[in-house]
Amino acid sequence: MIRRLLCVLLPLVAAVLFVPSLASAQPANAGAGPVRVIPEPSSLHTLPGLNFTLTPFSRIVVPAHSADATAAANYLAGVLRPSTGYRLPVTSGFGLPGDIRFDLNAAASLGQEGYNLNVTPLGVAISAHGSAGLFYGVQTLRQLFPAKVEAISVQSGPWRAQGVAVSDKPRFAWRGAMLDVARHFYDVSQVENYLNLLSTYKINVLHLHLSDNEGWRIYINGWSRLATYGGSTDVDGGPGGYYTQVDYSAIVAYAQAHHIMIVPEIDTPGHVTAAQASYADLNCDGIAPPLLAPGYSSLCIPDATTYQFLDAVVGQLAALTPGPYIDMGGDEALNTSAADYQTFVDKMQQIVASHGKKLLGWHQIEAGDLTSGDMVQYWGLAGSQPDIALAQQAVARGNKIVMSPADRTYLDMAYNSSTIGQNWIGNPGYIAVSDGYDWDPATYVPGVGENDVAGVEAPEWTEDLGTVSLVQYMEFPRLPGYAEIGWSPQSTHDWNSYKVRLAAQGPRWDVMGVNYYHSAEVPWPSSN
Ligand code: TNX
Image 1 (cartoon, rainbow, N blue to C red):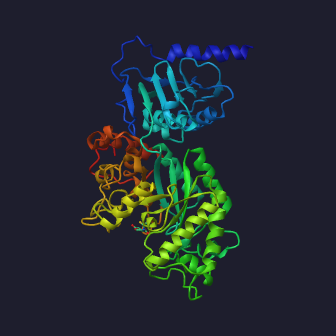
Image 2: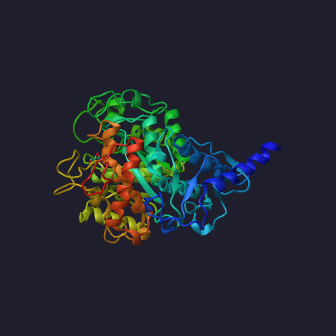
């Protein structure tokens, strides 16, 4: 009884001691700078001077018996507890001054991913219609606190969050990133760290490029040599690696907890040297090439073994993957005839459908007879006629398009002549931070409009990127731009205001230990 009374009284006392009263005159945004959030919310009103202060007595309050709200609350507590050192109990019941409250009572018009966030001296309220919305409300709230809130050891406060009234939902359903784990392998914990960073910016798809000429990275029962031999090296002849099915499931579960869908890709019918090196039967001449053999590869299209192999791979991946898509690649099949290619895509479509999934592939797969539920990923360059024609065919068939134009979204491209990275996308062949941000997926390809576009995805190819540090250097600061293009209304799109918000991420990455390119285009705070 006394404990219960204390539980109610202590936060009230704290509220009086710590929470500045609404009436007391405070300078605008005292102790908290201007609101700088990425992606920019669809509606945000700042409440100057009406900041919230987290106290040692703050609690995180959820509706009784709500597993979804409890999950979001526990996630927030996991962010806030290490740096503040506060207890921040997750509890149900009525909110008190100084608390952070979650509710799932928001209007259905916000969709599954939208949320409302109100931050005032009295407390924080996050409401949504779906669990993803609560999670995204947390991500926005996180950016309203000082950068050191991201630390994993106790820091000194005060822990002020800027006063805001936000009502927010995404422009596109597909906000993706791709990681090539085939050229260089990244293990489960490295992928989980990447998922953490992606979720910060409300990215909800991680496409894993699981196989290529240089490596096969997922264990397939009955075809063990794909992983144990085909995964034994990387593009540099280094040690390689692969995911067991338990590993892969761990990534899927971790992604799900962060509201991210895993899309597995097995690149076919080209980009298959690692598979063909593992099994001689996958070659038309019955001879296995060596690992890392140079040149373009192709599966043997007329051979029944090819489809036994693919049925095993797709069947096992489908069983391990809750999301609706299996990606079968389809790019650069330069050693497959046009007729064989079409035969192959038709067969792939049947195999994927027979395991209850939809086919996704690079836009070249439009050369097959796709049905309307399938989807393509556009990686063409601006003005490239054959690629544009395939995108237009996709639209005519009702296949949605994920936009990944190489000259805007390829994270392996150099920023400029003085950074590492590729430059095959043209002349001069670089993607400056502003180039990555300044385009609109709904107008980039003629004849492909807002309703034809599922969303946007930024691929990270890793031929040149053998460490997490290098991977991060190419992603940051460009990646948040793709997140914003995918989430924020086009009406908010403005490089000059974006670059100021982007600059505010630098101190957060410093605290998180993220390596990033200190582009001169971005007005980083002077300590950077
Ligand atoms: C093209 S894009 C590729 C990849 C390379 C990338 C390097 C695509 C579907 N194929 O195999 O890694 O360029 O920038």
